[in-house]
Every structure is written in C-alpha cells, then in structure tokens.
Length: 102
Image 1 (tube, rainbow, N blue to C red):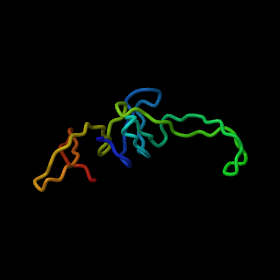
Image 2: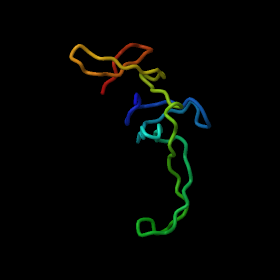
Image 3: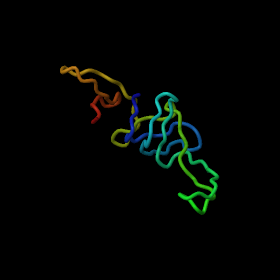
Image 4: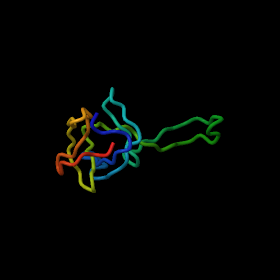
C-alpha cells in the first residue's frame, strides 16, 4: 500500500471530489480507506447500554484507494518507492522527488 494511516489525501472522484482529509484506517485486503470528514453514512442504532438514546449516527464510510491521492506540501502527487543505499525502502513524491517522512 502506498497510502498509509495518518497521511493527508485528496479525493479524486465522487460527491466529495476535491476535499482533503487525514486517513484514519486502511484495509489493504478490501483496497479501501476511511478518511476523516469524507463520505458520511447514516447508521440507525437501537438503544443499548453504550448508547441508551439510540437513533441515527453519522460516521465515515470506506473509500476506494484508487479514488485517493496523497497530498504533499499542499499539492496532490503520485507516490513511488525506492531503496536507499542502506537497503531501506522509502516512499517518495514523483512530483518533487523528495522522500516522505515515515
């Protein structure tokens, strides 16, 4: 996965196109990520001990990874990987060529 938890990403398609947010969770098997403030869904819940009121709860829904692009220094960029001399594998911005902090 080139995009990881904690990265800031931009949404490329859909209703939330152009919005940016921080990644909260990544699911590599399903190729999806949950982004803070993007793609809200409504969940109808019954009253329980944890939530005695019940009702409708809004929360973020997963977004396909292909619809997200990493944001570096305020600009969206593609990501590549390369190995350093010491054998470490790092991500880098294809737009600027700089390595990303891990």
